[in-house]
Amino acid sequence: MTSSSITFPALVQDFFQRRLVAERGASVHTIASYRDTFELLLRYAEQRTGRTPSALTIQDLDMPLILSFLDHLETARSCCPRTRNLRLTAIRSFMRYVSVRDPASLPIAQRVLAIAGKRFDRPVLGILSRDEVRALLDAPDRTTWSGQRDATLFAVLYNTGARVSEMIRLRVADVLVDRAHAVLLHGKGRKERVIPLWKNTAMQLRSWLQHIDHRPEAPVFPNRTGKPMSRSGVEQDTARRPRLRNDVGIGNPDAMSHLQWINGKRKRSERRQRIMPATERAQADFI
Image (tube, rainbow, N blue to C red):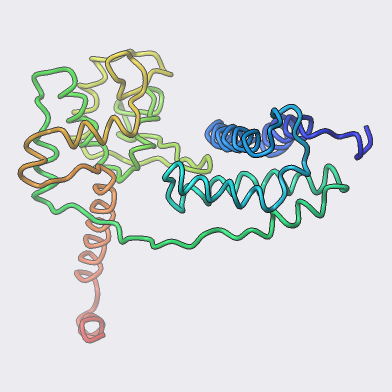
């Protein structure tokens, strides 16, 4: 196949099957995100050009259409700049592949690759106080199945400092509560880490495991249908609890990860102060 005979549908298919899957080994989450981007882009291009996705050419996806598509995301779909940049990342990745796979389309690819990401303010992440964490841990009704699940979920979140996305992907096989008390977390970019559990957290998690499916691939924190909870489900479950809304007004469990990190940093600092010689400690206090 020569470069002049490569059609746009063939480029898209090769990008997903060869570039993302075979060459890069992209995760299912990355592939799903790129798929959603192209679904939106092709639908928009069809409206702008009057051509079906199978009839589109790479020339149709030049810089003006891509810029118009990005504006459409923010105006018509009310997407934030972060989402806009995420969609642009997928398009840029595709155009980099096109520039190598189809050199005849290099000028178009260069113009699209020149589109810069949009700057946006990055707000400071908040944390929870100790009283707020205690209110969060005590809020679930432990007499119900969902209450026991939420109480265990919040306890493990606070213990590990994990993201909610990492916690809802936790599987039974990732939990070690027999000899070594720890959990294996699967983070972004396929990064894995083992986090030790406190004794009381391990006991609570061990008790919860008796109420769910014991298969290794089963989710540790399922919803009522047995499937993994969604991130929005965790946030809604946190926000709808009257005690949390009235007393502390929190609805984002991810804030616990920041508090756990700060507490750990403070404790390490305290240990360092205890073992530091008096003269060195005085210098540190002065600084």
